[in-house]
Image 1 (tube, rainbow over the protein chains, first blue to last red):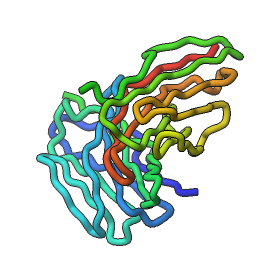
Image 2: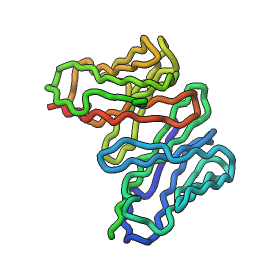
Image 3: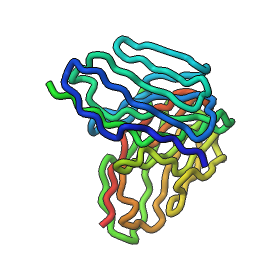
Image 4: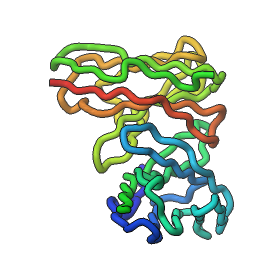
Length: 112
Length: 112
């Protein structure tokens, strides 16, 4: 079945440092979604990437979708303590059922 | 507009007991899903539904049962609880396939 691998599993940074998490799928994706989960909370949608090579920005967050539509990354510039949480990618193969396959998540800790 | 509501928030069961986790959404979403979240494993799909009366198995369906009699509700039944089912359970809904998922607050289940 489809697998989505996400690395690293943990990342500790000092406030102000940059952070990147990577996502790789074993199959070509129709689209990829990114979610953030605060400690003790539930996943919250951040963004969806659909096109090959697509790059989207949300303030300090930059999302990329690979040319082959099998990998993606999330980059945060100048982290803040409010960025703490787990970041998940979720791959969609584009079936009519809309099933998402989630990566394992990257747990980000930001030290002030 | 409550979004996706899950009850209960916390539950402790004894091995062999059965229970139902409730999930309701008020956004008129056709698609609903149940995930379990375990450390280091991301979110894994248990069962999903693409509309009232239609359900299907996800990645880890064993030991769980679902039904979808209305658009709003998608309960998850544990038939005979086992310690391996200790997890955090999330219900999610989407308007259509391939769109952002809205998650409930989660149910933290412990089976002793």
